[in-house]
Amino acid sequence: MFIINNNPLKVSRKESFFLKTSLILVCSMSLASLAYGHGDVTPQGLDTEGLPEISNDVLSNPFREDAEHGEYYDLAVELGQQGYAGNCASCHGIEAMSGGLTPDLRELTEWDDEYYISRVVNGTGGGMPSFKDNLDRSAAWAIKTYVESVQ
Image 1 (spheres, rainbow, N blue to C red):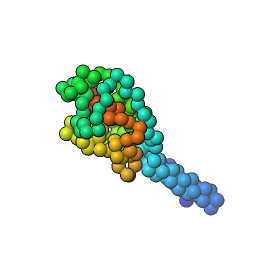
Image 2: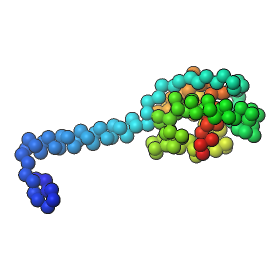
Image 3: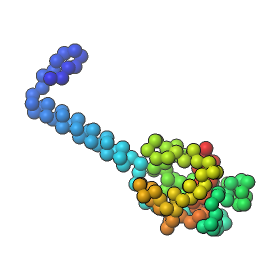
Image 4: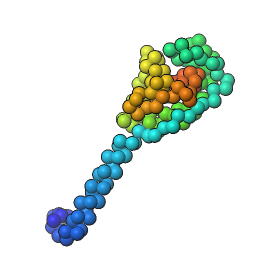
């Protein structure tokens, strides 16, 4: 028996079974969307023409305005936005605003550069893929530059 507007509503066993089954199905789909809601990313490359080649030894963002290649800051932000949209946004949110299932990249600071590059290169083994075969270091740092620009 269901109560609607303080009036009992009698339903047959068949209707009750249908309602319960529908409720279970809706709940299952909701849980599945939470589990897979972070996205399914196939790493994509990024054309970094115009940016200098960055060595794998570099462990801090070389495109910050006050860094070694700061003169490329604007181009790095522009290219980084493209790389972020194609590789990161489906999990970490548009403009790096996470929906809560993945880390909010806007909270990274320059002190987190080594952490960031390690995660991009190696992945996490728990959902985030490795981008080492798809993004060179210039692309990875350009994406970090874009993220810093929206903080």
